[in-house]
Length: 396
Ligand SMILES: Nc1ncnc2c1ncn2[C@@H]1O[C@H](COP(=O)(O)OP(=O)(O)OP(=O)(O)O)[C@@H](O)[C@H]1O
Ligand SMILES: [Mg+2]
Image (cartoon, rainbow, N blue to C red; front, side):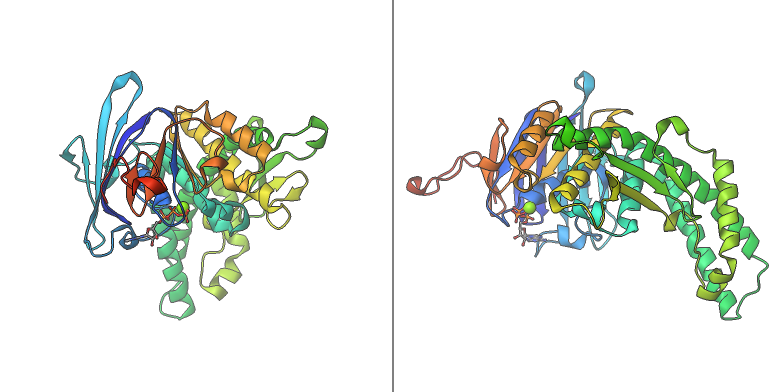
């Protein structure tokens, strides 16, 4: 699929803006703090219903406004067009429209637009806590199969209830009679998440290794032992390697493993009054060569690895439907010349990619440029001698 138009009202620093996008490469250029990332954030929000930068919606609404409107028209295989509109209302429930029809649930408007975003924040995928990597897998699964969202919510609900019970037990307010019931529920819901996450790791591993190799490749002899490895580490102590031939363990088998894991930590759980085994405690191990990426890889390696994970996400999403639009925020400036060139090569194979850069020369890609200036989009950069009378494509 590709995005033909993005319209914003009172989103971040945009009062009103319209961005028309061509197929293939588009580049958004402008100095720092003008609104480039805000545009990618808006597109990605239309796809997943959340921001990659903030956990709440309030910062997305322009200061002084009460709600923001994001609207996009996307074109799908066969020429079908769909318009998705989201009204972000921090004080109430968001409203969503598809082709002008108000949806009873916002989530029915999500997933129509498909996007993969790489942003500087993604360094956290490599450097951050296990929770950052679990969220990466969960968000990918959610985009790939919306039913995963319900499974995750169910697990989180059970986890909260079980933790509340453990606190009640420790405080002497509750007895142990209900604990086996909540453990059963945890194990069952947990096994569903585990099976899905392990399948995601299997699906990602090949494309991630290939994308990384592609990005960093110099001479083959220099690449020996520099491959990306991924392993899903269960809270029970077992690691599942990302060998797709190994197959995903059956949910029943995972449930039994989880049950044994919970039993192993029973004493500590009662002591700390929290659930200590389950998918909320798992880790996605990332390695480059023989070393863990976290703590060992160089800045450039971490950047390339995070990027490779996003590029692999694109492959994994594309396997099950429309090709997602690729959004690359500030990616080229951090790469050396060779990596820039190889990333650019890859970008030319995408149906649509939107790239931001503070410095145009950093982006070795042909394609239409839009210039971003203080929440305004202009098709040509105002030159010093024309008094800034640029061809306005949006109004600020
Ligand atoms: N809710 C809001 N209301 C008004 N302005 C906002 C709001 N949220 C963010 N901004 C402003 O938007 C501006 C542009 O942000 P954005 O992150 O898009 O910049 P950028 O062009 O990507 O810059 P950089 O090159 O530094 O990454 C910032 O100056 C910020 O203060
Ligand atoms: Mg930015």
